[in-house]
Length: 453
Ligand code: NAD
Image 1 (cartoon, rainbow, N blue to C red):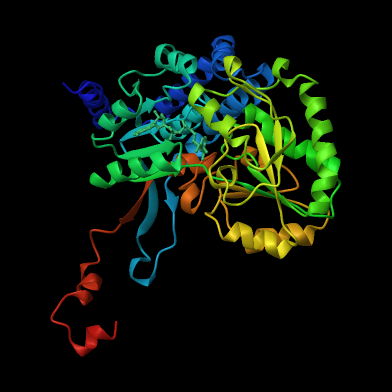
Image 2 (cartoon, rainbow, N blue to C red; image 1 turned 180 degrees about the horizontal axis):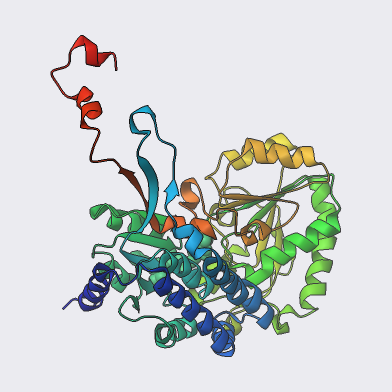
């Protein structure tokens, strides 16, 4: 018995009926998403607090408002984005009309992770619905409270003939992926990204893969250490380090490390107090499995700041590790927790060489008072996104594409790009039925006369 067949059949029939195509229908879905956020704000904040111990501030800025902004932008621009895009013609088609039609793909599958379980479900959904698709959303089974709200409350705000939430972990998602979709948008780990891409390949389904990895953070000697420490600690420990674009490790000279350590300590104490475990502003680790993985990482190198953990609370203190080796697990796997290793390099060249030797990251950070240094890091490396002198602020700019490159993913979204991601750019040429005498020049037999044309 296939648990998904009926739902998928219902959505396909709705798409084939053409009901998702009018702008009015799409706008109604986006307004539904907006009402879902407004009317269930408290419920959502409670669910995020239960899943990740997210503070009201973090829930607001990184889950609710950011999704709301995306909805507002889609609503404001929907008609402009949907318009056929006229393009220039060539000599042979100069009397014709050439344009790109933004066509919905059809049935879209969105698979979301647990770390921003609301935002990373809703943001792709905004693009997919704005572009006129029917959507199946598969939220993460790990962020259980948010999953419940998405499954039980969200569908009430959308047209249920065109939208469904399906639930499940790896096994059920594997079964879901056996079905043919017209587009798959996956956010999660590179390991599962490969499984999704292999399943999509069986049906030649296009994919966007929003993956993770290790994001380097280069800190130049020419910096104010306290400013750098404030910014790096804020973005590393936000959501307890469970952010795909968080700075994963620092690369700096031993001299800069000596200046950074006291400032990182003071920033951490200022943000989370003497006892960060009791801070309402520090998130907790999502699961027992991740807690045990992170606790093992604490034995890499030497603990310079933090290092405490408490299994009963899935708490890992904001931690800085020094003296780590490139071969240790903390420098080999994505940390995805509140642990910040510092690797020493002797020069900017060595830092760039270190970054280039590894997989292309989702984000890359460079701190320096010298714009030349920041620009050199930018010019000589590659990554999904880049931010000079701060953490992941680049991803808040909706006009910038958000996505990875190489092992950190493929495709991108946010703002208009989300609409484009979920639209097939159909190449259209409308010619005249007349003028056959002119067109006849191309038909055989080919004589020296028509070859000159
Ligand atoms: P994950 O890959 O374990 O799970 C993501 C989704 O895939 C979940 O819905 C899960 O149910 C499903 N899944 C898990 N195993 C599966 C399998 N074998 N077959 C089919 N589906 C399966 O990722 P996660 O632990 O939820 O999230 C953490 C990862 O996501 C990190 O690597 C992080 O960097 C990455 N991430 C990337 C972004 C981004 O925008 N690029 C954002 C957030 C998280």
